[in-house]
Image (cartoon, rainbow, N blue to C red):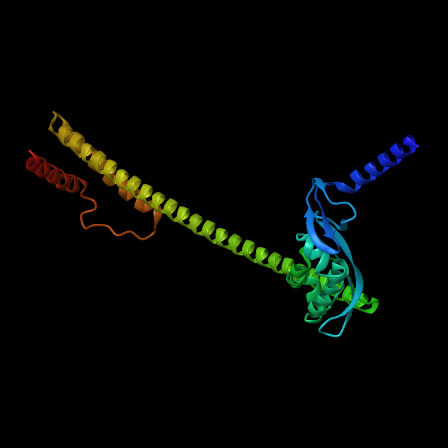
Length: 318
């Protein structure tokens, strides 16, 4: 009897201790009700409650929770059906509000996310829904976060996973993309041809400029060469004239010196007479008509006249 009582007491003690001691895991929060009313929120760690008076009514996870938002059909501004699904990230920030602010905050957040998404997509045209996905995400998060504050929940972000238009729209969009790519290819090709023509024109222009500059430089070089040749010829002719004049002067000087020597006049007389006779001989050989001076037969007179001139020149030079 005593053993049975001891065992029963031990069992009651274990049950009492088990219902009194509560160990809450990290990043969790447990809501305690006492006699049906909210009493406290148990934080992570070791906690104590009154058995049969207090009870754990709600258990919440305080970590960030991802939740799929069911796919739904949205109507865009241009009356196009669009299949949209996404994922929502939220976190419980107030365990008490999460327990008593809504009967099911997960369902409330899901429904609100869907209605908000339909409203945002309905304000946009089909093309804009693909271009402004970030704006759609921000609009949904803003609307959800404002409403979820009374539920003790913080909506962190919303991401659209997929936007699926009808098959006909997809086909039309594919055709549009193909046409746009072909247009860009034609534009790129025309730009290439245009640039090629510009490069060819620039090359021809540069070649013509270089050719004209080369011809001009060649003409300048030729002109300078002709100028230098003319200068050289002129200098050569001038030098030749100077040399002839110098040679003539030296010859005259030598003749003058020779005449002064003994027998010089006689040699001059002989030379003049020889040249006179030679000149008449040449005239007789080259033509039938001759013009003769009146004293052509008077060789001695001609020689005397020439000698008289030489003497006067010698006298003047002396």
